Length: 291
Image 1 (cartoon, rainbow, N blue to C red):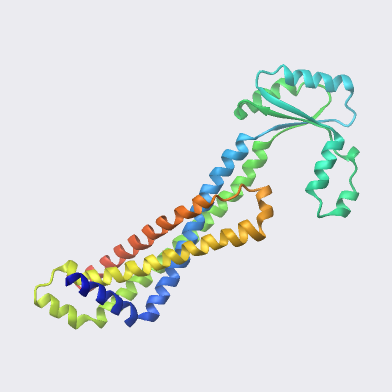
Image 2: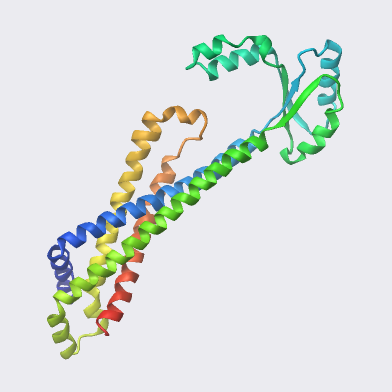
């Protein structure tokens, strides 16, 4: 009987303050969507770091006037290094073919470049990418080398941008979460005020504090769960429509977002939405009802 009463009061409370309830659900869903996107971004950046750092190469660009003897000496120096896992030679023509693929959407720019404009190079993968400095010291004394580039330096700048996006997403989610908390507290206060007489009667007949608070807390929990579901749907649709659809070309640069990671967001958002709503409602009632 008590359970039936509590559930009935929850439904009545949600419908009685339907405008506030809808606003609370929308605010909660937006904040949880931002939170889920931030968590996915964090997981994706970690995955990209493992993928790209695991495939890091050291590029040894040769001078335009490099001789066959110098090229052979550089090749022997690379082969003799115990730090090298594997190497690949890239001629000017091979570099030009890659360049045409990379800039295929800019044909005028491609026409302005010739194979002679691009340097030949050795692409070296080290057994331990952290030993780049030691490897560079071993080969940089060879004649005919124009430059030695460690891809970690370039990737480090890229990941700094991703980390900044992560931080911005988390800050936005935090601001939206604060707005959701204030709205939850305000909604619960309005609900408690509209039922102040019923609450007073229940206190007079000896109803327990938890029995009085339960309908209000459950109202907030239901709203939080609905907001979490909407947030999850937004993330899932965003993956299907954007990442797997219109922005699929980005997978050539970014590693694809696993569907499993997106599915993990449902229990996470549900737990955060329900938990935060319940705690906020309980704290609000403790101050407002003085129970």
